[in-house]
Length: 377
Image (cartoon, rainbow, N blue to C red; front, side, top):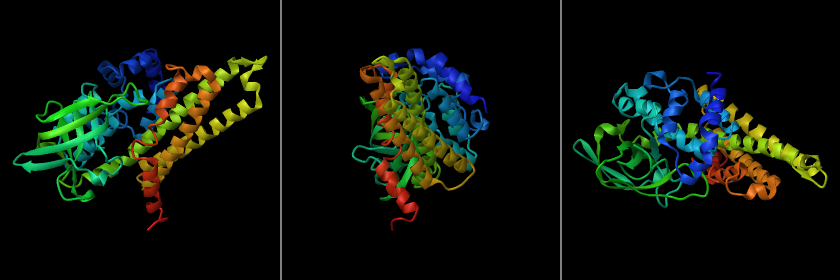
């Protein structure tokens, strides 16, 4: 799997870069891109071969992402193309625990082949990062659940063929949650609207509703009322993934800035020859390198089976702060050109803003880390 970074970079150069602004304007990416990514072996990286994946670990997935970001892919593109990274892990974990292949055959294999698109629905209107406060209910009636409620800010929710959905099957708090796979076309399940966003323009974001939606009991993942723990188990991977988005676009914005500052002449000399500019680039480089090194260190520990829940929170925050600073400075160094819609640094600047919010807001993750590290009671 050591070559996947190069494969990811080449795929982005060949299949993505020339079309990215059009997809941004269209606010969607074509389904054909999922098929192309699957045929290139990218969608299945990090998933077991037994379920249709390419094998490897989270570290290989990081390599793919790094390669694609370095070649010019955007955070929004990666969020839309690789939503399987948050939609499928719970199904794969269910398969690993129970050995049942029905959900794997119906959802996992087709998704890794690029034939289906999945999404993960946790966030609710007014709920934000409060997973334990989920209000969407699922009441069992015979061999079906009757689901009622709403979800919002769901990545790829408009295009999704199925949604791994957090629902309340039990009492209040984290102990009453379960995960259900809800298919497009399920009676009572609708995509209410596509939500316009500041960034991630080519990654559709949806508001979903469930009105007496009828979902087969066979679509339950794991045992009833264990959904919170299933989500928590996968949150580490999601947060590391978003951290890679952050240092990935920061690294690309730095590279573009260095190139621009070498070419751009002001007052008879290259922009980079100004000490204040050179020092800014150094600081941008420092933050990118620190973020990448720390995130990969935490990822290595995670793959080794260590408990890194707190460290994943810190890694995401470190990388997001790097992205916020570096992308801002990139726009500043590009001057008026950096402020023009459609330029790459402008895109990264907008995309960077969602990263401290998605996958758990920085404030929530800081509070969680404080508790896990024993700094609060």
